[in-house]
Length: 97
Image (cartoon, rainbow, N blue to C red; front, top):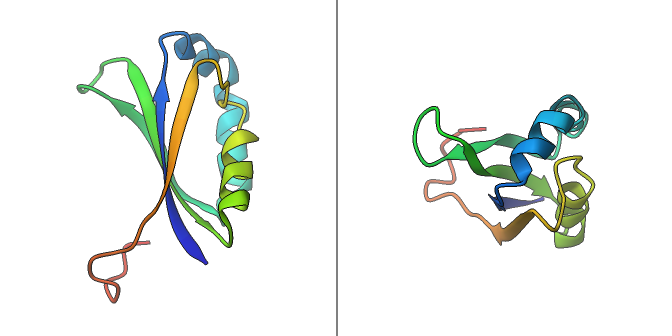
């Protein structure tokens, strides 16, 4: 399996989407926890508004990772973009996940 990083950037309109779809989004993360290993929102400062998010994904293919991202209830292409990058650990023997 390959480890991927999804880095999300949200437009200001995403705050309404977040409020409306949070329960479905959290259920989606739980349902796909085998592949979405870590996920969370990003802010510019503590307590500030969300400006994006970050996931660590374990998936066999890029297509599988893209499907996980684009089927998430939070994914609204007009207001949320993402970069999907392959990630490798600097110290592969150390366990963090």
